[in-house]
Image 1 (spheres, rainbow, N blue to C red):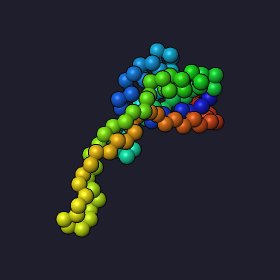
Image 2: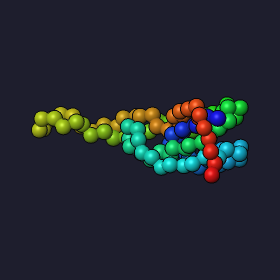
Image 3: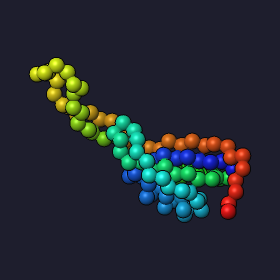
Length: 109
C-alpha cells in the first residue's frame, strides 16, 4: 500500500476527481494554497495498492496539464521616481506534484 499525496491546480480538480472516482479510487480532498501566484490548489490524499499505482499516475498525468498564465508584476520597491514600469510576465501554472510514500500500516475503523 502507498500513500499518494497529489497537489493539483483548482482548475484541474473536477476533471481529475471525476476520473479517479470512475476508476474506483478513494481519496480525501484538502484545499490548499501555494506556488508563485498563491492561487488555490487541491491536495488529494489516497491510499493506493501498489498494483494500481501506475493507473493512478496515468489518470493524474492525463488530467492535470501545465499551462502559461500572464500576470502583471509591479516592480520591487526602489528609489522614488524610478524608471521601472509594471510589466506582463508569463509564468507556468497547473500540472500536478505527486509524492508517493510507503505505508507501514493501514486501518479502517
